[in-house]
Amino acid sequence: MQLYREQTWNESLFGCFKDVHVCCYGFWCCCCLYGENAEKINNRSKCLTHCCMYSFMSLFGCCCLMHTVKRGQLRTKYNLEEDVCADCLMTCCCPPCAICQEAREIKVRGSARPPIIIIHQPVVSVSSIADSSVND
Figure: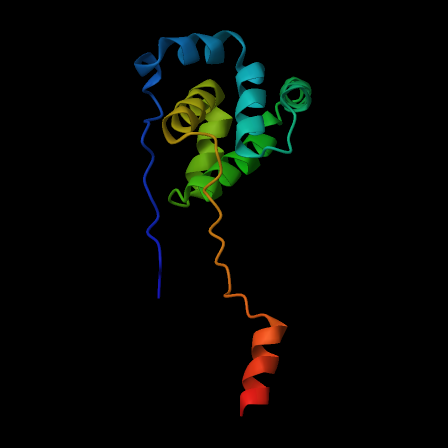
């Protein structure tokens, strides 16, 4: 039984002009926007580290490998529909558009993790158990 339904993207791949700031940032400094996205997707990540790794991998044309993995993590975080082939194609053929789409999606959905629900058990004191056994 499926308890949740996978969601679709709120932002389209070629919707860059919906947010001109993100569009310009992604066009002129794609690796920096990738680093910011990575940090928001996984709070343990560091923006500078991902920015440098993306730049280095770009020299060899391999940045799409790490980008595809990070895009998959974004899909998991927001419960987006799974499509590994499309992710790979987007990150290889049009990385700035994919990075801008991810930044806009994070902006719309927020970068905070979903709340953790804690259920407290009722507290039973030892003295009340002892009192009830004495009375019996």
